Length: 205
Image 1 (cartoon, rainbow, N blue to C red):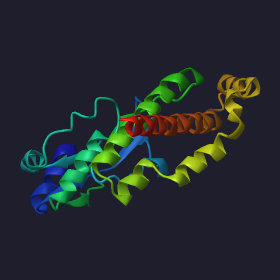
Image 2 (cartoon, rainbow, N blue to C red; image 1 turned 120 degrees about the vertical axis):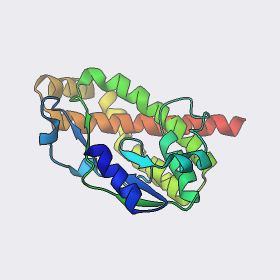
Image 3 (cartoon, rainbow, N blue to C red; image 1 turned 30 degrees about the horizontal axis):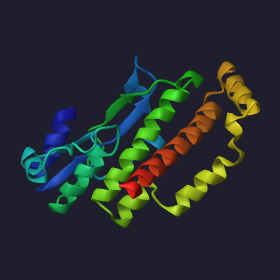
């Protein structure tokens, strides 16, 4: 049914990208029991989690750009090229996909931060290839997001001994929502740091 739903839209509509929901779940035993959440919504034009496009259009747009040697943004960059071919976006809510995502624990923080820093560096590659206001907003390469990051990380509280003890407390007491919230703020700071690192490197070149 999943593949048939994608194919049915390509038969029904011409020159389209078919996008469908991706529901993140921590339940491997019964993923289809998971309901759609606000955090599952995506406005991406072409994100490879659950998207299809005819092979002929991929050949016209060209392959994934090999300048993206690290994690992040290569699918959305291809989406910008597909958009320039005049393709439109159709959403098929019946072609639901499920993505298993284990519950975040404090032990995952360093890995998460490293991944986000990498994504920050590749965001700069994406923006250099498509310097539009849409991509600038999407990648958060602007002073508003830099200021917001400064505001959220002022005093570097989570790196103090008090902050570390607080995170350990949340982890040990299974306060998953709060722990996830603070870990994502810390990871977001790593993302912005990755952007700044790449911008600084580009200015030197």
